[in-house]
Image 1: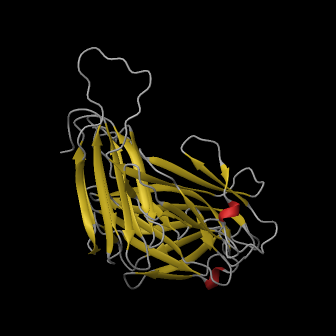
Image 2: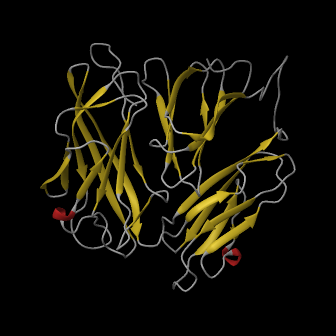
Length: 368
């Protein structure tokens, strides 16, 4: 989040997201995925992009993404963009003329020729946008990312059969890792809520496909899958399954007078799979609460949910964003304090997708 300008005006906001088919992993090697950068604004104001500055490590080896800068090819939804290597690890992505970034219509940039090394590693990426807002020069960033690289992600498509189940019902979790002939093979640990991890490697077949039954669920439950390779920073994926009419567990609760905990949820949106248009709206919370949202594309490609929660002057806030694929829906669950503003956007780049957002108030009051 950004603080107010010296003249008291509230500055605009920019969300920069790197889209990958596996969270925090860029597939490299002969079948490398393109590096996709999506720039959007949740504000009502329009931003103008003059140039995107991209920092990509140049060299050979798993920590580098560009072996030959001349091999990079830039693809956008508009014609005339070009990519130029300006020295060291800096690349300039420039439109033929200043380009607007309009709320609900993200700017999408994709680079081919990135990530040629097949060995697993970690690479750092930096993004900065040079542009203007309301006729004044404005720079955004730098945004910094660390992505795992390699031609075989250790965790792919971690997802439940059902995102929501009835109280007392179960669902099955699925995931995919490398084939079992990879040596040494990771140990896969599944964490349920705050409980100790269970070794679920035995539930994976020779192709690396795993499945695990949750057992009966009575309340919303989070799951974390860790591929333990002996490193200090193992690949991790998380999901959550919600429960209709869950049991309420309370500990050390005392109150004088009346108290309302989780009251009636408020559905903000629930669009069918054939929906193709981007959606965005701004709300103000009349009480503390939780916002649950998910995005699920019907076909190949990605769907993105982005939410920003901030106070009146935007000096305090938090940005949440998740990318969903056909096999792995994107899920968000986060708190919204009383009196804060929530800006939420859903987009699937013009392809059919389903998205929904539900508000769970922790008291009397809704989102308006």
